[in-house]
Image 1 (cartoon, rainbow, N blue to C red):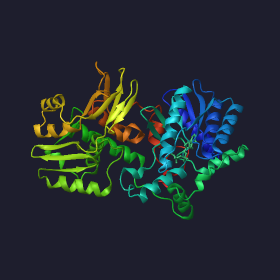
Image 2: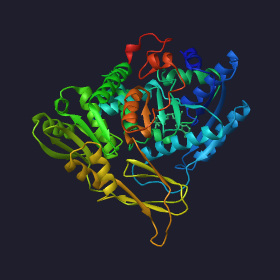
Image 3: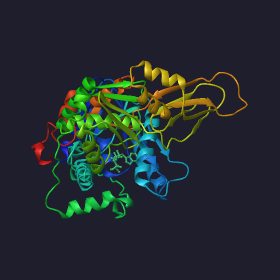
Image 4: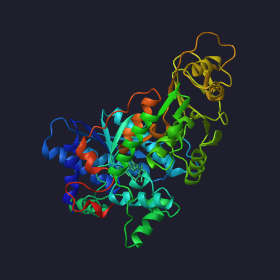
Length: 459
Ligand SMILES: Nc1ncnc2c1ncn2[C@@H]1O[C@H](COP(=O)(O)OP(=O)(O)OP(=O)(O)O)[C@@H](O)[C@H]1O
């Protein structure tokens, strides 16, 4: 149904809380070219006051043809009067994990382009086919049973900078290609989409060969509900002291048979450990086993100490693997995945683990923690000093707690949870997405968009 393509773009426009400028992320492949044309048509035809379109192509510089392809997208946009930027991934590329690195860099450059073109959000051309692959890949990795089974969210906040919207998640690639073909528009086929060394490519061909589409065990709405419940549990049962120690009431600590509570606790632990993911299945089992016994003692997982005492459970960063970091004047860098350190002074500063810092120690004890917990936790607190021994004068550095789990990629359906963590660690809530409930309610995750027939074909 090629008409569904413009309908999806119109639906996106209707779901905005207020008109805005949209940056379409256009690789030159069929999905994103379809997105660009559909948005152009929806904005143009409906003459929506205040909406405007811009586009950006990321040249990953991984193939010799990529610069030419980016230039061709630029020309395509110029013919239609759409402002367009090419952003190139400069510098050395990693030898391993190239797809993940390219993805992160792509979003970073898209966020830069959005700022440069005055866009309020980024739209990508992810389709129902991409969603199926994501669900199949997560299932194969054993992540499908939990919240990961909901697949990609239709909104995602990137890098604490910009909301990314995926208005085509309910559409098939075939529909988009039919839409382009009907308009005589051509597209590129990225040869890396045929490289079987990449997991997604292998999954795609397995899905093509199989009769059955993967079934998402969790709908986006279920995931959002689980997040909201986990957030409420965090608010009720967890206190955080000086961003370094989480305290949980003894009665709640061992309640690991409640999946939402388990997720809440592990998410708090991930923040304390500076990790951007929850632990794997085996580690979760180990943690649950330890907590269920209710016996006092300590265990370590994911860089975090679970310190069980008669009056409660205390979580804090293990004092191991804490590297040193130098932050130059005017720069912001991440220390240990847990803190953003901004150097507002004139000289470089060094961030290390404090080992013994009477100020931190006293603050933790004053906050009511058992002295034994305070003493251990303080060993992983950040300590800031001039990086050069001969420098005297005051240090002007700002230290802000980082939520590694969500500060780079925050799926829209986890926003309540992310906000609960932000407040717990003394930060502001994350900004709300620019799209309101229609998009959120119906477009999250899989299908379910109003112009579609049966949303359950995908979930
Ligand atoms: N080189 C690029 N330049 C601009 N946008 C791009 C580029 N590559 C991908 N995109 C955007 O991302 C969408 C999805 O592309 P693709 O499926 O290749 O990425 P992915 O890595 O699977 O997705 P994600 O980055 O969310 O994990 C495209 O439809 C397009 O909007």
